[in-house]
Image (cartoon, rainbow, N blue to C red; front, side, top):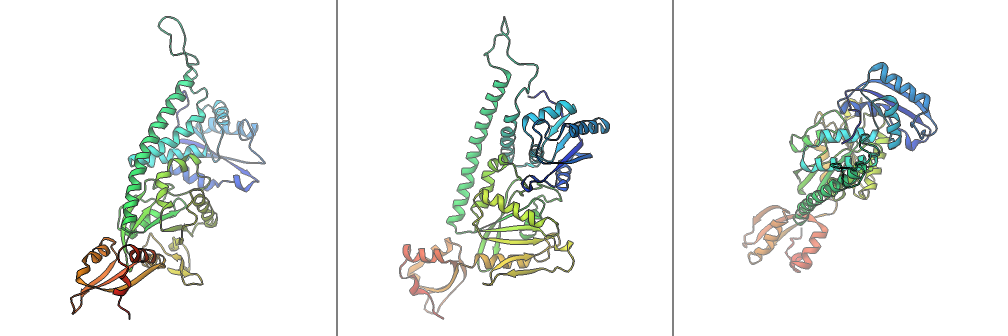
Length: 429
């Protein structure tokens, strides 16, 4: 669609240090992103500025230095560790005579490579189209206006207007299809809510080890690799927890500094697994020197998607890379688990994590042993539907002896709606 330079494998990276903390980026993270995209970084041009230059983002002298690096290294692409405006991108491309990509474009490219499911591909395409729509100006240099004359009379709109119209139509089409996917997910969530099955969602900075931990906890075979954004498509598996019963564990996309808003909007259906979870497992790579900044970045995104009020259990991962750190559970003053130290790669401490999850989900649980008369078989059926029966036997009188475990709110709801005499069946110890 666009008359632009094709991206290649050899890249010159550009990193600029700013005084403002909010605009700072990490050069090492850029190199990891580039590596994850399958691109070879052959040179790095760095500098410092007080504020971005309106024409080239960097100063004119630094822009010439970048262009010289491209010619000397015979690079195919320049990748900035920052967000560029459309005009800055075009000006740099004209100067360097090669494709220029900013941080947002690089992340979108990685997402496009990683998407596996139909939904994931739709979400990535939506984010890409929204990003491209701001960069359509003079995308076609050979067609400015459709010409008049015999055989050349057209609809009278410029190529740019045609592109914009086609983009708008495609975005509407994708949004309609994603709405169907969202409805299907919502039906699945409603079914889990009706069955009283709690959801535990893995969240964390990209490459913190979420998928490795997910595989260890569920014996799944989700793709896990030491690279950024190895997981894009959410995966759900059922796990069994002592005293709680069945629970759903969800593996979700990793977060990153200054995650593009287009991506957050596009992955709304996916992120709803996080928004509606009963418990968040915040996986942190504690061997990373910047783990505190990464925690803050994840909490910022959780706040942006209105998931910051959900109970969190911090999972301090990769203790195998740290000296003198053992698997353990840290508790607050009330004795509630707040942190679990483990190594997902080696499977050390995963049993402690399952114990901590059980305790967190059991905070509002009630356990009762009931003696249910044979005439109340419908009540026994309700407990089976709720999947809350721990054990069952028979008394000498022919009553069902049923051990149940459920949330306190569900117990109170049963008393009101099912049987007001429910408490009279409870065996007092």
